[in-house]
Image (tube, rainbow, N blue to C red; front, side, top):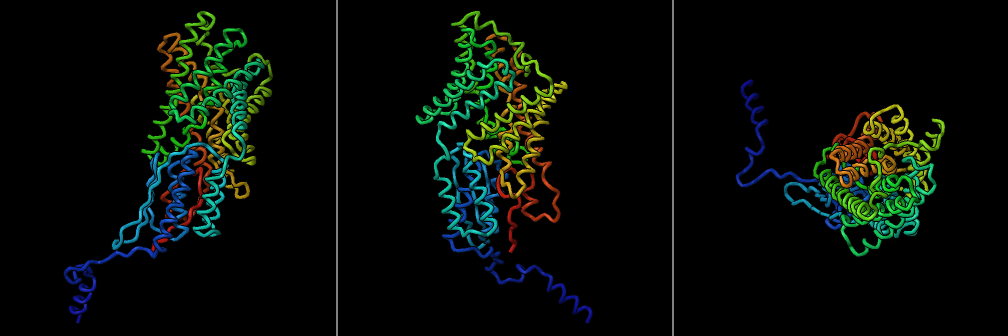
Length: 485
């Protein structure tokens, strides 16, 4: 009896495929999905939501987790998402007996509209809360994406001008009332010219070149006519405005979270846009020196890059207050120029004010610029992560992060390096430009680190949250769990 029982046990443990009749196979059935038209509707809904997030500068990890949360909420538990910088692909698994359903969407539009991003974030909360059907969510998303900007374009132009004026004060131009006015006027002109060029589909590389040339030419002209005694500050303010809104934060987030292809694409676009700006600034410098002679060529490049307010003769607390207010105004104006709703302006201003105050305090105690910028943006990322988790506020951390970085972008170091290379012919300009690049990358890394530190300690994490763990700046902070059946 013992031998018979053991033999029966061995037969029971044999591989089922070895005992199946010839010509048959063990079919792995997929999950029970809705009808095919509903599956296509849900996949397109997730793709369009991801497109809005990518256009707003969200990281690939955020877009992936958001799309998985949306399709899981509507009954597609086994879905794979592939995000690169120019396209998003989603594939719904249906088992081994049926081919997967795959959809792709190309990301073309990259204009910043934080009102649209905020509306999509609200829609996501309703979707993951099972408050809308797929058809209702699709109709609501169509209304959001086709709605016009919340206010006229001239308001955005005035906001860019206000940002340039605030930057001029932040960089040390508060003692010369004409300097913020010149920076604001040149930035407003650059914005209007850029809008005209954009309507004619001129590539962004050349738009950046034209913007840098206009801003530099105006500042050098005012310097040559004795209207300004510190033209580099006006140029640096305009450079920062042209650099703002680029994907510094998103690039570092993608690189840190393992989406290297998307990070490389963002960095390549950032390099091309910066190269266009550099070309425009260098062209104006060459022409200005050729026409103005010594009146323009007498600029002292060694004195550039110093962030001081020496002529104000203020006490340290007052200087810190001026820096903080200028930083807050810079970030708030950037958020307004990006069509942020009114309730996000205060949060953006807080982020910019904190970043400027921390950076100013660290530079006063002789902390290196790169480290000071990284620490300041880490604080901003931490604050943004905490605010984003307040359910009543419902503020995307991405808005606070990108707006908070704006006051610290290395516009002055960029101009200084370009002037040293193009006008003085000094090889030290290369080192200065490398310092500007390192500062920009440190700013993005600091924001991502701060948001990571703000994540609360969670227990019993689901499989989806373990897979997409990392800094989150957009989309649902706690995605819906995947079903395994």
